[in-house]
Each structure stands twice: as structure tokens, then as C-alpha cells.
Image 1 (cartoon, helix red, strand yellow):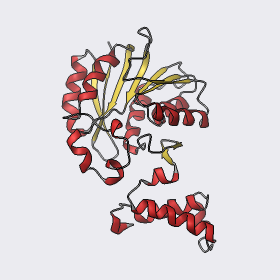
Image 2 (cartoon, one colour):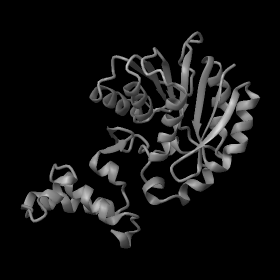
Image 3 (tube, one colour):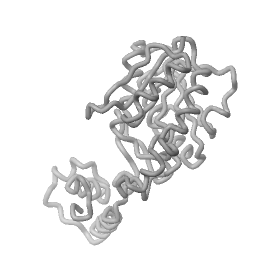
Image 4 (cartoon, one colour):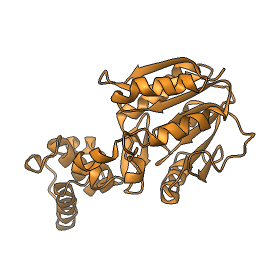
Length: 270
């Protein structure tokens, strides 16, 4: 797979083999000399063929680890990435009271990984996941059920916050919005440009068209002192900081991801 451009060919092969054998990856190392029967070999080869076409491993095996759990994913949703966990870090930093009855909102929830992870960290919290794609909400609802938070979360189809009652307020709003400049999408890795949903990637001419609409809408749904945190392209940091200041947020700041790249910009309502 290396010759096809895969960044981690050995890891990919191990994950695909484990999936074909219905094992955890560690199971491969516990019985390294196990022979494959005809059906297992066929299942493995079919997965390798899909990966050779640059389909993401997460879509082939139907799941992706994020934070402390494993989430179902397919081509209806973006694949959750470690960089997006930075949004969880900023919430956990500022909301130390894990037993609080916080109310969370995830805008563009996709697989539901963000809001579900928050609900699992805060057992008395409730949440709402919004997405413009009804197909994506089918995936997030499945994950909410599998991870046993479906009694504390609502999944709503909405372009940003349009479907919400004007009186609803949130303690925390997190979002991984579309922020890739339109002209750059086709130049991304084939795993992204050919397979992941463009509606969740395309941020318009400069990558900020959705964010410019989102911030003023979101501010109106925050409790006093509430947190708004957005994932961004590092090149957009200064402009997004200005947008947050312009909408009246205080204690505006940014947080780097594990690669020391500015990844999240945040602010608090007055």
C-alpha cells in the first residue's frame, strides 16, 4: 500500500486484517502464525483492494477511535481526528465540575463524537447535536444509542442553529465547522477529497463563510459565561479571534493541538 501513497501501510494492513478476522488488532500478535482460511483471505483481499483505491481505513472497517471510545463511521460523516480532541480539552479545562447539569451543543455534529464524548465525561449533562445532513444524523443517533447516551441527547437537522427555539441556552457550544477553502479541497489527499463529505469540508472561498455566519448565531444561544469553541485552520486564527471579539465574547484565546498547531479558538459570553 505504500506504493499507492498510504502514509501508514503496515498499520493499515494490520487494522484491515484484524477487521477481516473479527479480532482486535492485538489479537494478531497473540497468534501471529494463524493461517487464513479461504473466506478470511478473500475478506482481507477485498479490504486491501479498497485501501489501494485510497478509501480511508475507518470507512472500510466502519469505525474510528476518538477520545476514549470507538465510533461508527461511514461516508455520510467526517472521520473524527485526534486534532479535534482539542475541543474536548478546552471544555474539560474550564468545566472542572463533572457532576454539573451542563447543557452542550455540537454544531455540525457528524458522527456525534464530540457531544457524545462530552456527555460521557459529564454524566449529568444533556446535549444537542445539529447537522444539516439527515444522513449524518442517522450515524450520530446510532452512536448515541451504542454508547448509551441517547436519553440525554437530541439530534436535530438544521442549517446552523435555525431549528432551535430562541429561548434555549447552552453552557458550552463546540463545533468543527467546514473551514477548508473551496479551491483547496481537490488538492487534499484522495482519502479526503474523494471519500469524505464535501459539505462538511467546504468553507467557501476563504474557508470562513460558514464560520462568519456561525459565530453571531451561536453567541445568542450561550448562557452568560458560556463557552464557544471552534476548530479552525491555523491560518484562520487571527481572523476568527477578531470575529469572536467583534461578537462581544471575552477571554478569547486559542489552543494548539498535539502537533503544536493552533487548532481551536474560543471565547466566553459576557
